Amino acid sequence: MLYHEDTPAGSIPYLDIVQARFVANTQQPVPSFDGINGTVEAQVNHGRWLAQCPRCPNAIMLSRDALLFLCDNCGEGWLNVTWPIDREEIEAMLHRRENEANRNWTPGETVADLQIENAANGAIT
Image (cartoon, rainbow, N blue to C red; front, side):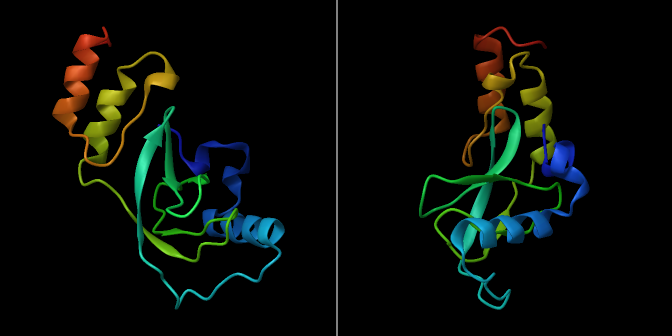
């Protein structure tokens, strides 16, 4: 799966990128870390680990160890990122899919669900 570190901007620390994009796009100062407003769950879309803003359609690619999310579109404040406990197994199932566009996972979907999808769609076993 792809993470922030795997992109051309990956040499810049995740939180630095998130905060710079927030200021550039919202024209607002970065909110204080003291104001955590809730949580957002990590998900996989086209082979990329993302967090989607709960307030708008924006999503941000996550770092491997990302614990915080800040929307650079609508200005939603800091949110804690929650990761699935079986992230490695999810990635293993998705890597069996040759087409990255088919490497998708949403919270609530189990590893068993992914196995069934893989079998039904001829993914590499």
